[in-house]
Length: 217
Length: 217
Image 1 (cartoon, chains in turn yellow, green):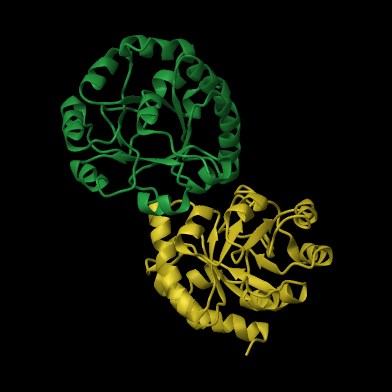
Image 2 (image 1 turned 90 degrees about the vertical axis):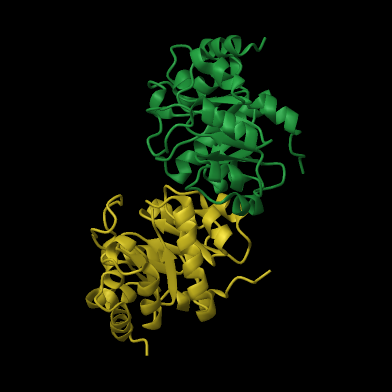
């Protein structure tokens, strides 16, 4: 049994966190976009697709797992715990409408980490008693990528979350190189990015621009 | 660890097999419709919902599990292996777009049975090498309930499936009391019914009518 990555390793991997949206990849194969973004410095990849059937979703997960495992980049599966189990994912990301973290924890091997989206300070308060490895602060800014979310946290909200928990925080929603530094300064450990990487002309170059803005060599 | 039910027990439970569709329940709580149909003789219940988020789907599964377990009526989960694991379901039903049966088998405890929808004779041929407990012959007749299916098998097609496999066969699609007997005579072990039970004025009475037509006392 693999041990779970140490918290400081996970925190570093989460710094630039690609969340996939195949519909934003402009016809390019998802694996190509992921490979480029990782080459450019994305340290963690979440496969997210609420449309695909289980078979196709798992097929994509297996492709990404075989791409990422040799690079020691963790693959996180959004929502679907059975897909995470079947592909040997490193993590699972759960939203408020997904399986409860306690239930997912019972089904997953101990080395698989769990992230959870928080949309309110009540969620943050509840997170203290849940078996979680990081929180997704969602959305930080308004975003067209996800439309089922609550009001954006903003930087002030992010600061409040930071003050309320010691868990690693990944900010998501409307993040681009221009606001990356401010989001980190407000307390995020990592930036989760969808369109600014998936839709970029060159996802690798886009990842490097994020790194430069974030002060990562 | 529970043993899996003996094949003859499963075959009997599958004879009248309710597949849920909350949208057809005319505003009645799904659990009430299920309870009535089981009271009337349905021997197996499949929870099927391709719209609900994981959390709500699992909540429904837990309600049905607590209803059905004391009655020794198996609960089958459509597609979502993680929901089956989390609710302690007795079976999983997989379509051609769901997880492959071999993969599901690896994730599920040995006592959980697996059904698989076959839409072509190629599927039936492949089923011989898969870890399956029954086949769903889908659709037997044209049906408005599911629109993503291939051409109906018809009774002749069902006879061909019967000749090609020894697995229990559950026929689904357009089944009502008027054709129940003919479907059994063509080789089905069980009838899977959606609208003829879910949408019935009295799902319990509707189940009893099926039983009478099927010659079950």
